[in-house]
Amino acid sequence: MSDDLIFRAGRTAVITGAASGIGLAAARRCAAAGMTVVMTDIADDLASAASGTAALGGRVEAQRLDVTDFAAVQALQQDVFRRHGDVALLMNNAGRSVPSQPFGALDAWRKTFDVNFWGVVHGVQAFTQAMVDQGAPARIVNTGSKQGITNPPGNPAYNATKAAVKSLTESLQHGLRNIEGGQVTAHLLIPGFTYTGMIKAWIPKKPPSAWTAEQVVEEMVRALAAGDFYILCPDNETPREIDAARMAWNADDIARNRPALSRWHPDYAAAFADYMAKG
Ligand SMILES: NC(=O)c1ccc[n+]([C@@H]2O[C@H](COP(=O)([O-])OP(=O)(O)OC[C@H]3O[C@@H](n4cnc5c(N)ncnc54)[C@H](O)[C@@H]3O)[C@@H](O)[C@H]2O)c1
Image (cartoon, rainbow, N blue to C red; front, side, top):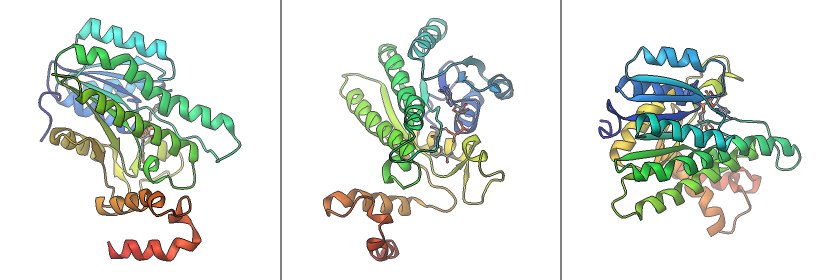
């Protein structure tokens, strides 16, 4: 099942971070549906990714775009609307992971926020009003992460960017649903562990636990057709029920006045294990 108002010939998709991974898989899915697909990225292999995608169908364009550059994102919006008059799907998906610590390494915080958060803000700011005004159904999908919800220790800057994307996207959808007659909806894509360029950089072979980018995109297409806001993807080791339990534990830290990130606190190890075992 797919959202036939969106994934069909004559409609346009704009995807950031489309040279690799989830963005590339989404571009390929849109091309196979016959859409006009504007693939954007800063990667050198964008052109070859686009020519491979074009072989699947649709009309595929490659546009070099750095999502940290708001003027460039605005220029892309104007160019796309001038030539196609329509954006059915905007995927603010470009992302990066730079090793960070809770304090120190300020540069890592700035670099990660520039792409993962400001890149999404730029896409939302540049495209949303025009998508509302076009008067046709449209979807804005922002790529978040489970790390932005459960906040595991390891890469705090990355987690914080994805928490901010969750917050922004929830507010965006609240604003959109209050527009009378509005036909644009926003959605938070929450991939599980997905074997993409980002992961290949440190794990050369796909681990059995990871999903493919294509699996994430099929789940996104299914969830959009169902009208889901939170597109929570499992992977091959973490089913939805486990994610839900971990997220509920995390949210309960405040309600129960537990220490920060109690899931990883030695005093709470037994309680957390017991909670997960009870399901
Ligand atoms: N792979 C996972 O397990 C996983 C899990 C949760 C969330 N995500 C998120 O999914 C999204 C896609 O990542 P992926 O896993 O497909 O990784 P990927 O590295 O394969 O793709 C990310 C793409 O973003 C592009 N990019 C980076 N900086 C950019 C910039 N300034 N402007 C434009 N493009 C830029 C990269 O060149 C790359 O092609 C990211 O937002 C990532 O944080 C991934």
